[in-house]
Amino acid sequence: MTTSISGVLKELCSAPLEAAVQAEADYRTIWLKWIEREIAMINTLDDATKQGIDWMMILGSAPAISVNSKVDLAITMRIASVKEVTAKGEVGLAVGPIHASGGFGFMSRTTTESTLQASTSVVLSNNEQNLLDYLGKHNITPSDPTQLDKAVALLKAE
Image (cartoon, rainbow, N blue to C red; front, side, top):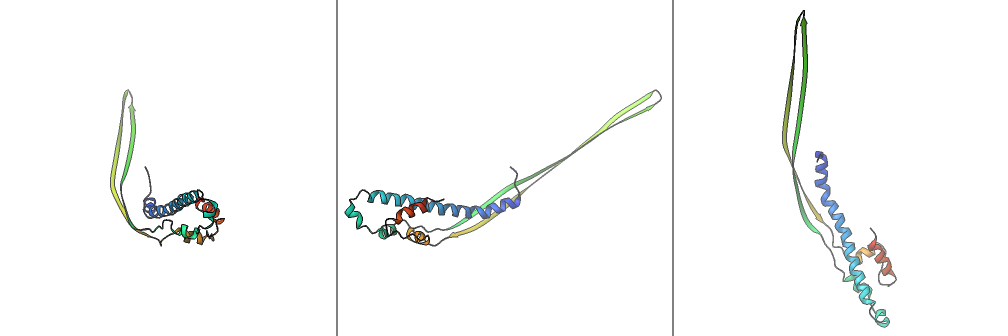
């Protein structure tokens, strides 16, 4: 595998951040599954009972997520270089009936090897994320059951 030193350093710094972005997407998937289960359970109730449901209270009980972590990453790379030089020559000499010929050549091979060690430490933190605040940031107020479809569509969006 061939890579550049700057590429390795970029990966060390960006990998934890990409993981945090993926974790955010996973939050939405968790909330989506949770809200779909709640809707399925509530749909088993009779219509009179459904009318008295406080969706704000139900959605307020969704799992809240808070990330606080320190990620230490390190890499050790072996850097190898091989350089080879080959030369060949042939000479012939003829003087009257005497003929002489010969050849010569050489090869030089140089190998160097070194290691590169790089590390990074990233602190990841976010404010507590809860479903009601997340929906509120997208102007969805689930106190009205018709807003639930919008909430589900938002959580399904990639």
